[in-house]
Amino acid sequence: MIAIVIYSESGGTYKTTMTANLAVALERMDQDVLVLDLDPQEGNLTSLFDVGEHRSDPEADNLVKHILEMPDGDFHDLIETSSEGVDIIPSHDMLGDFTSNLEQKISYETGMKNMNRDEYPRYELLYNLLWEQQKLQNEYDAVLIDPNARAEDLLYNAIYALRTLVAPVKPAGKGNLSLNGLEGLVKNMESQLEIEIGLSCVVPSGVGRTNAHQQYRKQFENAFSTPVTIGERQSLMDAMWEAQGSAFKVVEERWKTFEQDDEMVSAPEKRRVHDREIETLQKLYELAGFIAADTFDAEINPVLELEITDYENEVIDLRKITETEAPTV
Ligand SMILES: Nc1ncnc2c1ncn2[C@@H]1O[C@H](COP(=O)(O)OP(=O)(O)OP(=O)(O)O)[C@@H](O)[C@H]1O
Ligand SMILES: [Mg+2]
View: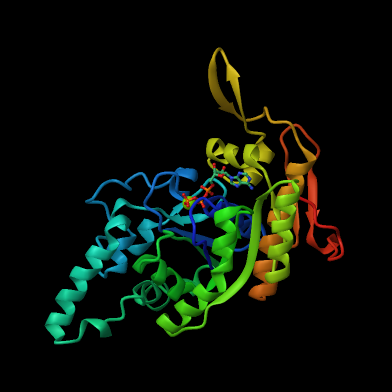
């Protein structure tokens, strides 16, 4: 099964955007996809996909209660489905207090069992929940996590549970630094968690046409497996928040934000069809194909038919994309 954490050491490297687009691309490859949103902050995947109505209600059952083995209901009742068919376990405010809640649990249980705190398997809880208790491997083809970037218990639980990382990077200052640290970081996590962690690929994203950006892109390509580069596509990706869905939805339903009577409004059926945006969808589909087929050996549907409102359909066929094709952004 496909299991990936969309990982980045620094914030704002387009993790949430990438997670949402990969989830929908995999879904359209006929995979059954579940996404876990572990980020309690505003602007997370839960708000992007317009789910998680009860995320601020402390009484509501949520993923943290299940990870800490104090559920308030059935695990499957946590799962919601986005308009594009992706299953999501939404974020909840309690994710922000995960560590303090975990510490309480550890104090209680180690006290009862007369056990040393250090022996408590604090990073294995999510693994146990997903695979041993809920056996999601029998239900889904792909599980994706958009984690909370801070190197804390939740992130370590995510990595311990899924073991493979996809790393979006931004071609500038901080992004570049965090990339340099990536291999060292993976090694550290491997020795600390006593597991093997795989890096599926690095995805340079938001890459413009400037010389500096192209230099960064080459640097990434020389050091890591980089199946695609995603260009500077702020207009397309920002429109995802209006469409409350993926970049595929934005293009197919033609979502656009514009000024009307001195107010900014967003509506479908207004966006022009841009070749470069179709090309970006192709890159996203290619990336999902690389992760599914090359990293995880999954059988995928290589053909994506885009049904664009009031426009001719576009067909993306991964079998027709050759490796020698010049990378464009
Ligand atoms: N390829 C791109 N080019 C330009 N802008 C982009 C691109 N992809 C995403 N964006 C925009 O960048 C902003 C931040 O993206 P996103 O929320 O995915 O980052 P993040 O890594 O999840 O941030 P955080 O660390 O806060 O969770 C969004 O407004 C999004 O629309
Ligand atoms: Mg995010």
